[in-house]
Image 1 (spheres, rainbow, N blue to C red):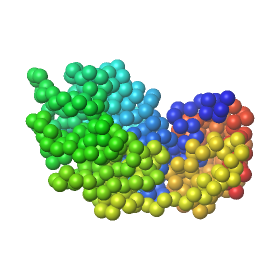
Image 2 (tube, rainbow, N blue to C red):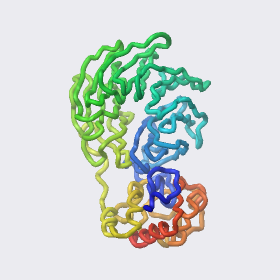
Image 3 (cartoon, rainbow, N blue to C red):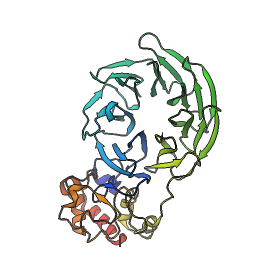
Image 4 (cartoon, rainbow, N blue to C red):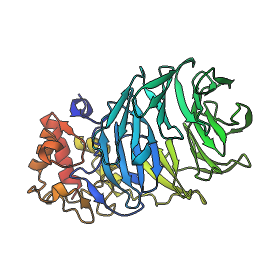
Length: 431
């Protein structure tokens, strides 16, 4: 049986050591790409002073954007986290595959409230203009408007199949879109306005008062608030799955399921440029608060930053010394185990630290002493030296028991042979 089948873990991607194999840090090199998720990044939420991301690894990570490091890892959901939304007072809402919406305060380690009612995964969230209610789109064919004060929901039915997107309009109406190819505008009372577009819709955004709809046919449609289609632009030959609008409403970013990211000028309806690189395919998008950068959440588990004016990545592509070491140990049973970890950790002195510290010369090193990395305070006073025995013990009983206070997600390797394979690989490849 392969290693992944024998691990008892609480993340989807085995070995993706979210915030540090041997401890999590509070600071590192500023303005790097964000490395820490153990699977594709499904949602990005940007606000002044903070970035929140979520994805296939079931976690929500709150980041310090100035330092490029994680502040908190929020663990609650039982499956993929598909959506994030800002809440008043610096809180956030998260929702996804487990059909639950978790509401978090700005400093909460656990949800302050959980909203339940959907009977299938939740695909999207949106906060009302007055901040008093939250909308959710469910694959159970319904959308719901939740009163944040009481937790009660108004259930909106009518879609034939999955509801993929929700969006509040400035006048308080709710727009919903889904697999049935309809865009529906729901007033607070009475029947909705229904626009039949004839193709599944995956995402909605509001730009300069216009509704922007992402279609499974690769088309981007601009719709006024009466429900009239004003224009359409072909973006890709495959479905568009993510949208973002610049803070001034002038630029729109649209990502297809495969292929490059397109930047569209809303006024001219033209594609300004296309971005392409190692981050694709892209699952999620956001603009920086000043509109100068685009953040993309990719299948490579990273949140990358791109300069809007040039289309170039903000950070150079990292060195591949760690990949070279993996190739050198291709026949070692522990190499494949470690491969899922390279989004957060390196083995080479040249590659340096990522979201977690470099593991270069880890054996014989005291915990929380990797050069140039700021560790969690709880780890700095521990009397642990990393050896084959202590690393094996970490994965035998789990990080929470062996290194209390770490932000590393709980991962236990139940088989002694599997633990030994990983330990032996680290011992040899990190020298």
